Amino acid sequence: MGFTAADPTRRAISRGNGALPNPMTQKNGAAMDPKLEKTLADFAAGKGRLTVLTGAGISAESGIPTFRGPEGYWTVGSKEYHPQEMATFAMFQRRPEQVWAWYLYRLGVCRKAGPNDGHRALVELEKAFGDRFTLITQNVDALHTRAGNSPKRTFQIHGNIFAMRCAESCRPDIVPIPEAVQGKNRGEALTDDDRRNLRCPACGGWSRPHVLWFDEVYNEEHFRFASSLRVAAETDLLLIVGTAGATNLPNQVAWEVHRRGKTIVDVNIEENPFSRLAMSGKGFFVRAPAASALPVITGKLKAGL
Ligand code: NAD
Image (cartoon, rainbow, N blue to C red):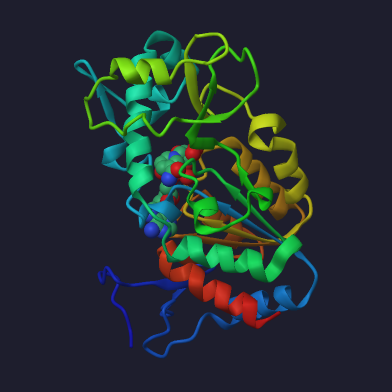
């Protein structure tokens, strides 16, 4: 069965400049690109390390919008803000209540969302590959650990929206946002209870969401910066899923793997800097939604063990 370029269900694995009529689901009889299949089987049969780097795209099919889509915008008063303006310490210092309201809206969305087949496939991969496996995620929705990936091998390099810490760093503790704090609707303000619950219990000042903001830098203590770079330097196969490649540490990880001549497989519904990086080396671009592609890739990797 062939696909036309206009067919929205078209799911092809592309390598180089050629798109192969090669559906990930395999329900219609077509096979995976044999070169990709062999790469996965050879990798699995060896002892090399597998790193998976995920972004907002893997959670899109769980109903959590990515930042690049129209739902990313947020209105404060009469002005529309992009996440890159809202998710900053500078904005938090100016408008802590509005920034918290935005995060509580997103927290509500994340609380309602559940893992999809893409997340579940990565749990299977960790079970199968054990210490050969590391998951580096930019997502703050905690869907990987909620699906069953271990906190030990899951580096949440942009934090966790379910957690908070003192905004003035009076002490290092990271604590869960109290259950009593409700998710917000768009435009809904904080209540007095929220204000109380979002105070730092030690100094009485504001707590802040435990996320890395756009005007902040990575560190090891909160965001596993050095650990991620160490893993990148040991990675033999890097599987990148659903990220636009606009943030710093993921780029460092991908470029390090590429520089060492190791294989990158990029899964995304759109071409992006990582798909081009993958194909400029000995890697692959799998143009497909994560929830369909990852179970197939996981199946091939497990079969090669
Ligand atoms: P992004 O929003 O910039 O890009 C999302 C990428 O996912 C795009 O390349 C898009 O083509 C791809 N995509 C969309 N749907 C997909 C699907 N079904 N399957 C595969 N790919 C799909 O996201 P980003 O690059 O990950 O990161 C930007 C920042 O936003 C990160 O710092 C992250 O912390 C934050 N963020 C997190 C969440 C979350 O936790 N779920 C959601 C939005 C933003």
